[in-house]
Image (tube, rainbow, N blue to C red; front, side):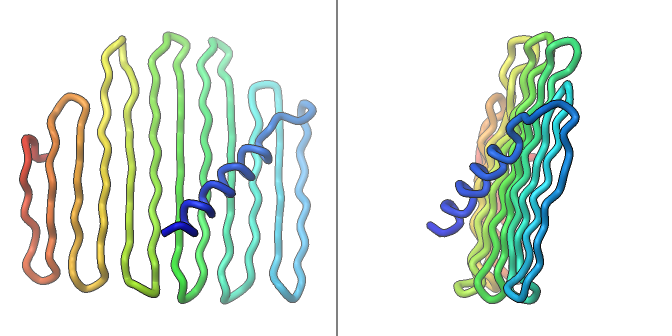
Length: 183
């Protein structure tokens, strides 16, 4: 769904811009509500990080939001998070979220998730990954899923150290799994 990718890209950009550091201890919110909906932008920043969100919507029609935050610990570790979501009645929804962290000792953690649902076709998608390094060893998994309302779904999971597997589920008949690893 091209609109989902475009929407998530725009929301990620907005979240990144909103979360850019401003003067220390700055906090504030700006909002407006009118006959065509409302919008709110919030941001804050301090000595160890910054965060911000932008939201807009119209009652019974839909809306969206994008947020981002970053922080650094006293010993050098850091974390960055972003999220974006949007929905429109009768059209569908899309959402995405990411987290990236690095410890002071150099270990890393990354998690990304994105999903969408097209209400007109009854199809949905999900992709996610989690991984990083711990004491120099890589770990992680990637999951991709597709589903159709009333029919079923397929899921594929690929792991860094434990093989891969696929699952197929049909409405009313259950699921079957195949692959080199099953959870």
